[in-house]
Length: 89
Image (cartoon, rainbow, N blue to C red; front, top):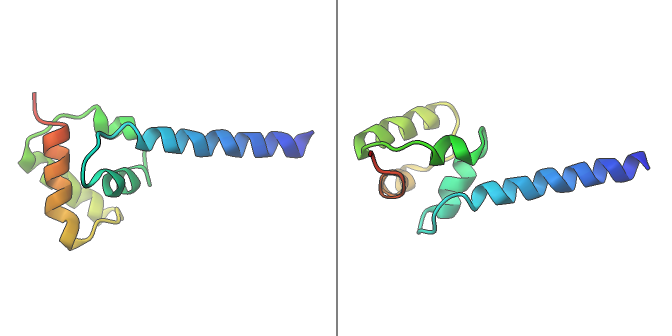
């Protein structure tokens, strides 16, 4: 019984991770942003924020310095995706 409970718990955690990734709007950088952001925190930490492009650029730079896996080639595309998806209000 205990082993099945562990597997159930693992399945729930994996499903929760997939659901979090779906919290991000569709777009070219969806998968990159979802993967990079949910490495360290829940998707709602990102999707609840609304920032200018400059503020998103600063946030992405900070997250990269903290270990987020975003390449130099993807940097501007990630910032554009976040600024378009979660603009300042």
